[in-house]
Structures are given as C-alpha cells and as structure tokens.
Amino acid sequence: MSLISVNDLTYYYDGSSEPVFEGASFSIDSSWKTGLIGRNGKGKTTLLKLLTGELDSSGAVVSSMRFVYFPFKVPDKSLTGQQLAEVICPAAEEWEVLRELSTIGTDFGVLYRPFNTLSGGEQTRLCCACCF
Image 1 (cartoon, rainbow, N blue to C red):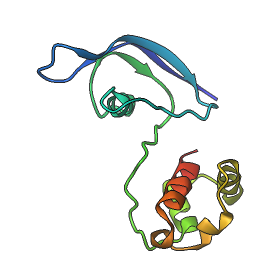
Image 2 (image 1 turned 120 degrees about the horizontal axis):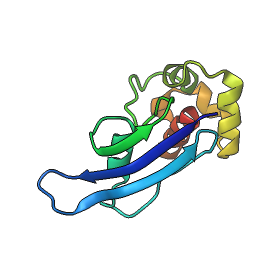
Image 3 (image 1 turned 60 degrees about the horizontal axis):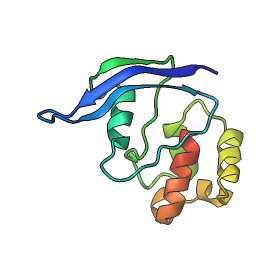
Image 4 (image 1 turned 120 degrees about the vertical axis):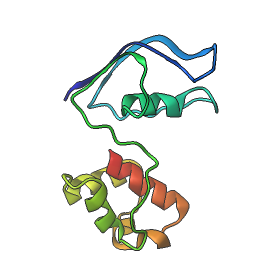
C-alpha cells in the first residue's frame, strides 16, 4: 500500500487564461478502487495525463506507483481474454483477475474467448478488471 499525493497542482491549456486546475491538493490510498467521473470538458483526462507525466504542470505529483490509464489500446484483439490479461497485467495471477471479474459481476467466460468476440461491455469490464 502506498499513497498518491498531489500538492498545489495548477494547469492551464496553452493560450487559455482559465486554469483547468488551480492549487488542487489531494491524496489517494493505492488500496482504494477509485473511479474519476465528471461532465465532459471538466479535466478528467487532463488530470490522468498529469498523473502519468504525459503533461507538465506546476505543483507536485508524488507516487511510487506506476499508473495504468484506461482505456488503452489492445495490442492484438484476437488474443483470448486470459492472454490479454497476461499482457496488460503480467504480474497478476489468474485468481486475482477472476476475483476482479467477480467483483464487477462479469462472467469468467470472458477469459476464454477471443477479445474481438466479446461485446463492448465485456471488453470494457475485462480491461477494467485487469487494471484493478
């Protein structure tokens, strides 16, 4: 367990006089399962890009963790769900992926079918389970 700490985060889009974030500070415990929700255009993707280091800002993002950004590109959609899980989260054991699928109410069968045969919702839930 570790802490993700954001201190005095300020970010402006180039050419904008209005900040997306100004003086934002918060902490997130890495043991939490956390979702980020909000209206379109309010900075959700920008915040995630700041956390992953894809964008630079004033302030500090301190974490010993690697961030996983979702949605991500699936490298080979012909892989089974299980093979894809091994690519996305190579350190995870199968029982951990099964636990996460169970937690979000997804049938384990998604692991044994090619990713491209899963419905859009099944694809999303499998990828989310792998992120968790």
